[in-house]
Image (cartoon, rainbow, N blue to C red):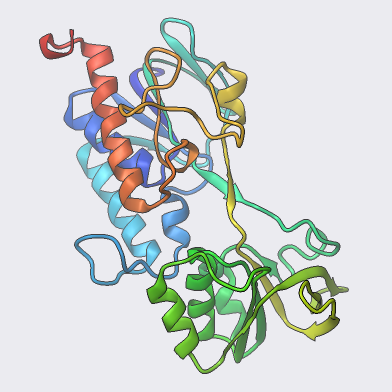
Length: 310
């Protein structure tokens, strides 16, 4: 069972889509996921821009993808961590904390991880008031006073979600405009218990056992003040999970994203990448799925060598 035609690393939207198409193409397909399947889709409070659903919460959409992949016949190993690759050998080798797999082709769909703001108190109070996932931890802060840090779409979505749970939510952004969809900005402005703090940065998160306040700095006026809060939700972007792939010889750009061509091919034959870990500039569920499908079809061509791929 340790010899496969296609091994996919990561069970987010890109990896699951790749798995479905790998199986449908007839490849013996395995997905290895270090956490629970679903990826960051499962952490989205609400998804309103995925075709086919006017509105759906992230966990439900992710679960539908997981179920479809399993029903198609994909073998999915959750809570299994890849520790190293040998991607230039034939067959390729994927080592995990449990075993070792050989595979004819590999798709790297490892996504990204949350970026920290790097201020005093952030690491110390993580899980004790500092959070990076609104849908995961939001229900713990019912009727509390919350602070969201960030100015992109994920920050605004998280703020809107938390506003339905907390007493009030303040969102701080170091600039004077958001980098997000206008529909989200409008919804934010219309919500009564949300306050926007422009040109503002968090300099310190304070608390002993739990978060009690944040030290804020206005970069326009130079004013510093303390804000009493019960929780700080950091939403300032993500960095790619590409280190192991890069160590195995996969080329990345200056920000660590895996370089792929239009067919999701990396610089190593038979190795593909899809989703948020790639240098594709648009990081959305829909684009990740499309990349996963393309990667799987190209992997099929590499493994089976059909006449139209020769």
